[in-house]
Amino acid sequence: MPASKSSKSLRTSKRPTAPPARRDLSAALGVPWRALVFLVTISAMAVLYFWRHGYLLWWGDASAHLNNARKLVDGRNPGYEQLGTVWLPLPHLLMMPFVAVDSLWQSGLAGAIPSSLCFVAGGLLLYLIARHCFDCERAAWTGLLLFSLNPNMLYMQSLAMTEAIFVCAVLLTLYASLKDRAWLAGLGLLAASMTRYEGWILIPAVAIYFFWRDRRAGFVVGLIASVGPLYWLGHNYYYYGDPLEFYRGVGSAKWIYEQGLARGNGPAPTEGHLLVAAQYYATASRLFTGIPLLVLGGLGLLAVAARKAWWPIFFLAIGPVFYVFSMQGSGAEIHVPMLPPHGYYNTRYGMIALPLAALAAAAIPAVLPHGSRRWAMAFIVVIGISPWLAYPKQENWVTWKESQVNSVTRRAWTREAADYLRDKYVPGRGIVAHFGDQTAIFRDAGIPLRQVVHDGDGLYFQGIVQRPEVFLWQEWVVSIAGDPLSRGMAAYFAETPRYRRVKMVETKGAPAIEIWRRLSP
Image 1 (cartoon, rainbow, N blue to C red):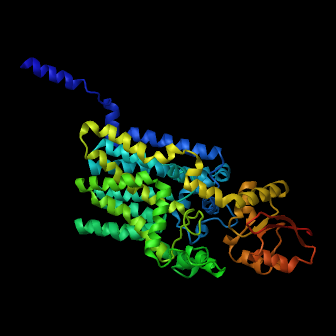
Image 2: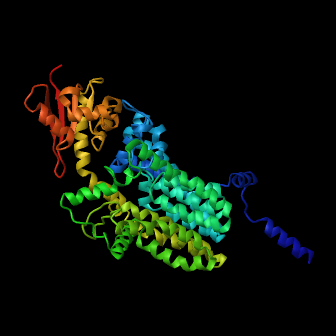
Image 3: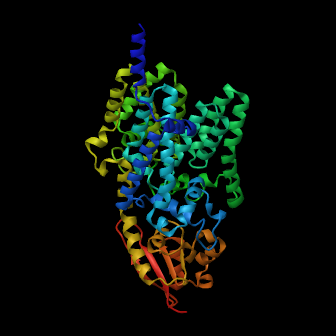
């Protein structure tokens, strides 16, 4: 009998364990180091791939986010007033230290740095959430791999976009709620509400969840989280005279939609049709996430029910439901190639379904016998990413495809105009231009924004637009045919020798870019 005990003890002692120092460090920091190394590696590889191929600046919004962040630190009037109104401020503030470096601004890496860091943090949080909910290491790795091996997610985390930052904030909120840390959940909601407007709708849900468990905790969550929306309403009222300027002002989604209607475009197919809106969102989610993972996520709901882990699923489902109702009310619009009007627009909205599907699918190994969990994890991950394994080309990544299709003309005229100004512009002579897509011309030409007078310069810029013959002295003007600056230049200088249109950049399917130059001193 003693010999038997000794033999059992010997067998037990031979089980592989992590080195004590490594195990102690992981426990002290609360960070699963293998998951961290994996996420950092795959994130860096993705950024390097997209940077080497020049894809970091293809997405129009990514280019605009970089330029918006840059004008906070570079311009005739840099500073807080340049935050603007339509886009929430946190992503630009996170980019601000990096866009101050010319090479990072011009390459797009200034936006990739904060996005990729948030991707890594979000992946770790999803891992911890799955491990907490299902008490299973294989389940945690299943969720992590399904999330991080999605090429659409890897592309978005490489860009100066808001998606990776928002997902990180959402998962931080969820993790904090599972750990009953009200202050941390409040901070997560604050970050989410300052990144994307979908974050605002999460606040009451989380506050109610905490309030139901502990009234004081619910009050803390609501107090911290509400700072974001209240601040943004106040910011818009103070600088624009309308607390809802971000919603209905120039450049807002509502304004863009109404401009399309004024040009004769019909209403969105989803407007007023809830089921149609659900169909469009489901299609975008399918293209972003892949059909196999959505199916696995559906099957995983049975395992979620077995583990009674409904709160994380309910919380992560708020985003997709919000998008469906927003599309039904014309607050958002999605175009997918297989449904009218058969294009690519806002397909990235399907991203919020990825952590939901990944977490639900991760529950499956947790309800299986211990001996089969490793193989179940491998099977689920391979099936979940099978669309990208079967057809690994970029054309199968809907977010990359959208950036390619929608940027062809913009990239063409940006390159031609930048090449022209790069050779001819002399620092200090000055440029006047609207702050919009054409700002990329100056970035690509290596011209700092402090050389450019734009909308962010307030009354002086408006004076140039309205009375260029009085206020304009800069040597160069870059306008888009038909915009207010273009009309002003044509009205006052068409028949005088003071300014002449020296370059027209014309590309099919886009208004011409006009470059004017002062001819007289």
